[in-house]
Image 1 (cartoon, helix red, strand yellow):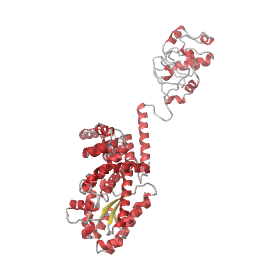
Image 2: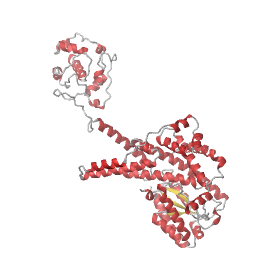
Image 3: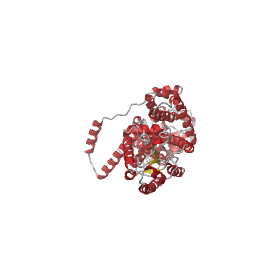
Length: 350
Length: 203
């Protein structure tokens, strides 16, 4: 133990006691006193000074001999302290033994320990009957088992990081660990998909995207119709997205209304890019730079001259777009307006 | 911690450096190649920003090195590249499912009070989710403890955000440019709220 080690003749030429690093000592006033009070260099002396205090105590020759031995238990510190208070003179080395605890018991401040027990006790606890093992004074409300300490530390660290993640992830107001983890997973997947989509969409070029998707869809000639966001190399998690997109593509070829309905059923919507960017810029400045919405590109099936152009651009309102896309302008407008509202709602949620 | 503008700039620089490597062959390749080029260089750029301090960056670099070693070497010029590529990653933590299942069954036969069951269920959920997180984050399988996993996830999310920001701003700029020059027909796009992604992803 730290306390006792300082008293070994070999160890210290220092006149200060270092505070033990264990947390249990903080509440021990004796240790505080030890830390503040410098030990005089007499500590090194092997021989006790022949002072009055020396004789005033019940010391037998055995103790004298024992003084030469390296001190291994903390109680010796207390013994010294006791001698301090008792004699008021130069410190004396009164090393209590298991049986010699009479000295200590007189003071009634420390608990006697056998010399053999190299314990962590720092005790200023109430004098207890001699025990083979000293009890560690526990911090209030906390366990002393090293395992539980480690466990507690680990839990604290995890909680810290969960809190940081909560701030980072939008919609991270969940208190439950499992649902928070769920959100995190979804968010990471979403970001990864966004990167994929962005790297494909405009950076990749419209024609190439369209040709790729049409390849995947099987209709080679339909260069005008393209969807980004899913690719042939998509992993398992993206298969369903690709399927959705292919489904929507198919439906759009037949009837815009059904495509919209299908999307509605899934909770998705169609929206012109200008509106999307408007929404995203409106929301993204508020909290985090990331827009809670991925952008995938869908080219209208109508115009064949899309191959040279980028898909993503549109200046027109939805009304015009509907007119171009198919004849069912009214139905689509209605649908889209309602969906747009829904989308606006969902966007504003975080 | 939100992605800062300096991080954005650094990523952009590194990414452009990577894209330069593809420059000569950029026009005669298919979209697939192009997308791959973009994505790979972006990944390596993102990972190299961390300079090998985080586990996910090393795992990501290793993964891209298997696909395009030349690119990785070019981008991470210097000894660092060699060290990162040849660095032996810790072994994947593999549990034999049969054994795990059997031990779980044995455990389940023990006492089952109501509160215990609820706690056990919650624990199972959390465990399943952390496993899911390990699958998503690059190098997640190699992280031994949860604390490290969460830390890496944090860093990875921030890097992904910078990546997305930079890419998106480029796309927006390019779009504005094209809108001015070319008269485009009307197109619609599909927007998904990010929550909706979760539905198909739930496994």
